[in-house]
Length: 204
Image 1 (cartoon, one colour):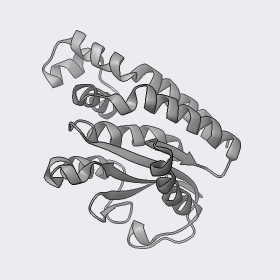
Image 2 (tube, rainbow, N blue to C red; image 1 turned 180 degrees about the horizontal axis):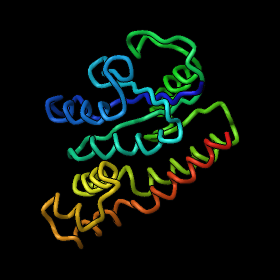
Image 3 (cartoon, rainbow, N blue to C red; image 1 turned 135 degrees about the vertical axis):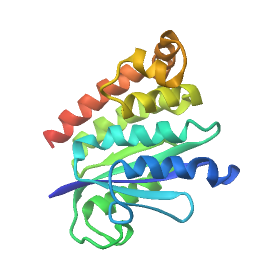
Image 4 (cartoon, rainbow, N blue to C red; image 1 turned 90 degrees about the vertical axis):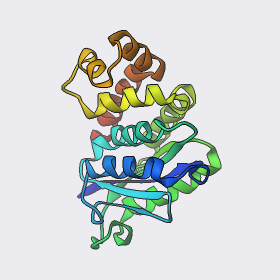
């Protein structure tokens, strides 16, 4: 059975107190699994999350990014690895398989290539296309999200059954303000990319 493993780290974590973002990160990771079997934070600012639903991996990565970029000056690098899980341990950081190897290896290349999201699924053709799209989405808008735009994206992902008017009520701002924040964040394009990702991984 294939799984998706997301390995990531917090960019500029040393310049801020962990109290600022740690609770937020734990809250998001808890939505997708149980600690420490499915997710763990280690070495201070690195984390790993295993997802049984591989087609959801990109949206989860975006969710994590939106949660961290709510805080000015912070960002996150996330590497998606898709493959087998050959060894299941009580802690995710001790589990193993091709998904884990690809995800961990990918995190190292993120720093070298100066991008914030990548994928290694073992299919070079699909990975090449997706990584190019991730790079364009990152450089084009995701890496430049403001805290306000990040919060709007986060709320949309966490409340898929709510419309913009309802999100505005939660955030206690005008509906037009939510729309502008989502537009600046490139939210529609991100959702289009998410659909492309799902289709590409399904045909993998």
